[in-house]
Image (cartoon, rainbow, N blue to C red; front, side, top):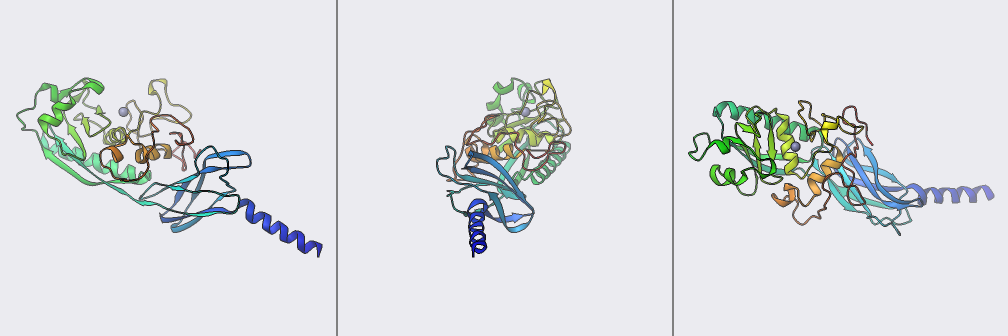
Length: 320
Ligand SMILES: [Zn+2]
């Protein structure tokens, strides 16, 4: 009798203590979670969980309660060919289970204006950059895709002058010259392929909104970089100090010259979707009605996963 009773208590104890789960829907080959809540040791901030499956996947997130936690109770879910989502999870001291559905990829149209010819050559260049960018977005579970990649021939525009073809000025360049003189399609990012940017044909620049300039010889991955700026991302480190323990030139947002850009961290993907400054929200309004955050740059707190957080390895950098 005594043995039976203790077994019964043990069973109940396990059920209460470690069985909080999240049932993730719309999984297409894997899902990763950041879990916020609390346990007996205090707040839990961005506890990582990953699972590999397709369809519906039940993930055990450990023992999470919500009472007296100063941070928010929520789960952020990431997955391939899906938009990340935030789900409120009001954890209790009991075993909880919440549903979290990954979103459809966001469909974002862009317009490319070929300003510096020859047109056919630079049109092919833009298409190659488009293909490379789309591949990076797919591989890195960025959750966005081009719904249109319209390429316009502006090489014969009579308003083209030296200030447009060879644009200088950093953040304070002649942005209005491009949108006023060359053209601007409302409600989307406009990319102007010119001759040089600040003296280099390999350089690009973003106004962190609807306008990007690209030099005529830019590497294909630089388009993913400049679009990252349009999505509110900043350079993660000062590259002049060399690689760090968390970033090198394999990250798309690497500041200095790189032909190796291929990775986004989940901290960066989070910012692309949820920052109010990101063009995803500020320009495309692609998440209408959904909550936004202000997680610019390396800020890390209860609301903002650190931009160096990874749920999956990025080349030599393991999940952290
Ligand atoms: Zn940059």
